[in-house]
Length: 214
Image 1 (cartoon, rainbow, N blue to C red):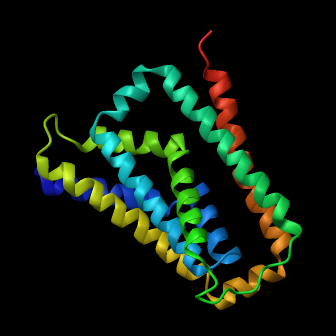
Image 2: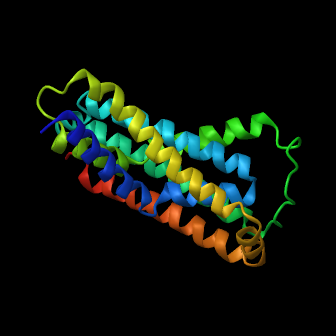
């Protein structure tokens, strides 16, 4: 299998995975609506950076580490699950707050965008299922001795896919009509989003507890 076919196969599979709804989708869409388009785009950039990091780790043999070092995977699940529960509770607590007015370009300070980027990156990296999916995809498609071309092209390609998809999500959900619809049902939507994130987090924690070595 040529390196180009390997690259396209991995990128295509990653695209399908990125488009599947999960914690990242909830986080980016909620950030774009509740904060601003700029904050949503920053969160999308964080998702892209997180995806590129997972790609680099997968190239370095992440699959072997997760399979052979059980405690590392369990710790990853516990930390990631705890972080998702924290995010879910934060969104739930904010459900009763009114939707803030749209911010003008000069009011949305760069510090807020950096914060959204950091939250997006942390959300991407805290998901052990994403790490396992990346590791499995790379292990399935990569040849035993990958060409150097793939060590450069794959992280860049994954970044473009992840950041590009979530940029589209941020643009759609920060538009006037979705934002207005969200404002009319904010208390319900926020509580559902909070429940989804907290539920996913608690499931990860429970899985880690069940898998712990005796």
